[in-house]
Amino acid sequence: MSNFTTTIVALSFLIIFVCVVMLSPQEHAEVLFFAVVTTAIISSMIAFRMGREGQAETVKQQGQKIEGLEDMHERDVLEFQQKTTELKATHEKTVLELLSRKADELRGVELEYWLQSLANPPWTRDAREIEIEVKFVSPLLRHLGYRTEDMALRVSVPIQEGSKKTTREADWVVRNEKGDALLVVEAKAPAKPLGENVAKQARSYAFRLGAPVYITTNGNQLEIFQRGVLEDRCAISCDTNQLAEKWETIQGVAGKENVQTLRESLTTP
Image (cartoon, rainbow, N blue to C red; front, side, top):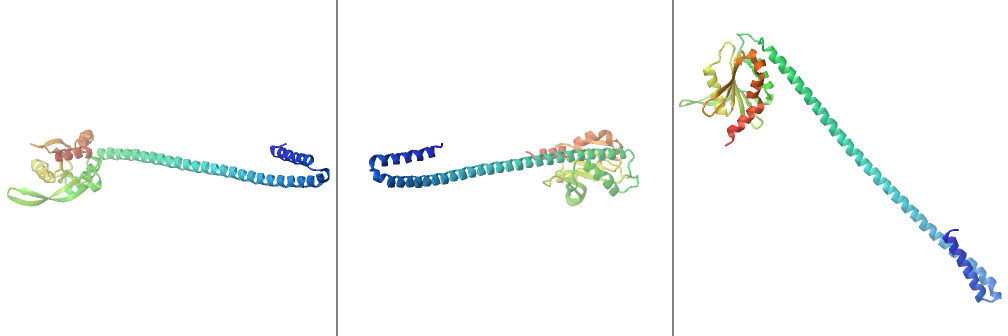
């Protein structure tokens, strides 16, 4: 028997007892009937109210459970989205690293093939200067780490010749992202030998533009100079068919990172 039922039964017996003790026998039947009806009505009202309260409590508990489930679902969705984002970022990073390694491998293969081709240069002694620029200067600069957009051809340079000012054209000028000149290339046809005059011509352009390195080549020979405070240094002088064995040194002297460092040292007080 529930507490509610026990309470109602006790209340009923209490009312009956009061009726029996306090009223006369003639009044017992009427009052007893009234007491039973009243008790039943009160019990029904109490039961109805308690039922409503029980339903409300049940609805409240169900609402709390639903809210809890919604919170759990929202957390699960957020965790899933976060994990998905992390996996996507990891995947993209892995793909980029793989592509970067493949690109490095391809550049290495391309460089090796190019260096091997220089054992027998693909131009003749009668080749023109433009052929040397296309077949030798352009790939040389690319393999040294410079981008196509870093390179400019036929750059006008103001030159002071004694008391006279004039304008000359540098064959190739390579600049960094800020527009600072990094190196100058002076190209000649294979039939024209390199020498002091060609080096002076390239140096005059490099000096006016502030480039720390300048290169001279006729397709068969290559010379790389580094500008100094008192005098310039010829860091590399070799035949082009020797580039494979000297490439590491060439890269160290004229590679983009090294030349960029030299350029910064020239502008730093």
